[in-house]
Image (cartoon, rainbow, N blue to C red):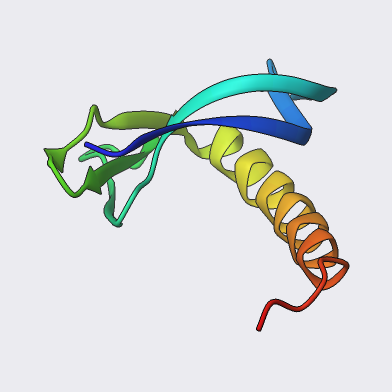
Length: 92
């Protein structure tokens, strides 16, 4: 399993439907190479099962309302990551 210590430039922590901004924290993270996304049999939650090079990681069950907040937060974070990457100097 490839695990990295990253400096998080900006993060949103979603708790109880409220997003909290967090900046400049050290985090340990496993690189996810793929994932399966399913719904539970009652349609109450989205189940995300990430995979890394070493195998399947712990699945996450997120309520439908929480999943909607997650998607909104991902759009914001991905846009910020793209902006930060575009500001990096080009490497030969």
